[in-house]
Image 1 (cartoon, rainbow, N blue to C red):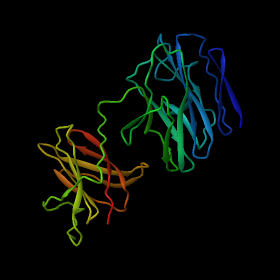
Image 2: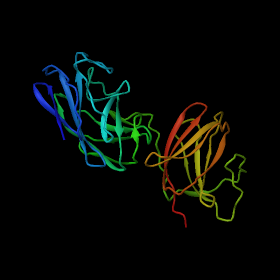
Image 3: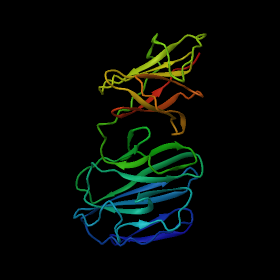
Image 4: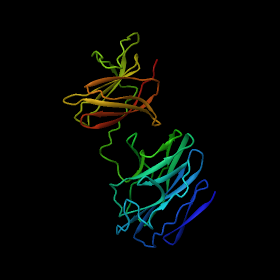
Length: 294
């Protein structure tokens, strides 16, 4: 491994990762600069240190700022970087700290497995702050202030999924059903392309109802048919549904539904699913846990 040494606040910040090097960031020595240092460990055990610096006088911006941002000169297949204007950085300088802002990671995986992000230090913060990793796919916020964030990922690149955040958005609508939520399936006839008239197995279901929106969204799992039944009320209609597994892989996509209800036949058995349900007014993200099949 080759070490790239960057002058920052009259200290040396080392970024060690594979055989990677970076350009130099000339952030001036100034006690008004607040710093968050993170360490990333990839599934192949390679390590990367990242730095996020806040300038209280807004000397830097959320875009590219000469002397405040340090690029990745030789991108690698297993890495975590800041993404600024679609380019990869290991140091990102921004304006004054704003807990409503989020900053995007680019996470690159050549191997499947567990990846870990942890906060290694906070510097020059006068007040206590919260720090989260926001997963845009699962719509979850995980605190990393005192505990490392660990996620199991497939071998692919994630350039629009993970962010560092400083509060939990009130629009987080992720819910989970449990194995104890069994109800009887609706007797409505299915008319969409995923309908299945087979009724040889008992159609017991798990259901969840969205009480936080005006959609009247209801999701039921038809055990016997291995289908999801999704419906909305009032003046809402379902436009599309995308079903992911808990690793972010797409299991099923159904577009151009334009109806108040639809059935989604599951191709394989995954206990934990993430649903992106788009209606004529909004997109809702639901995380559900299917019951055991007898």
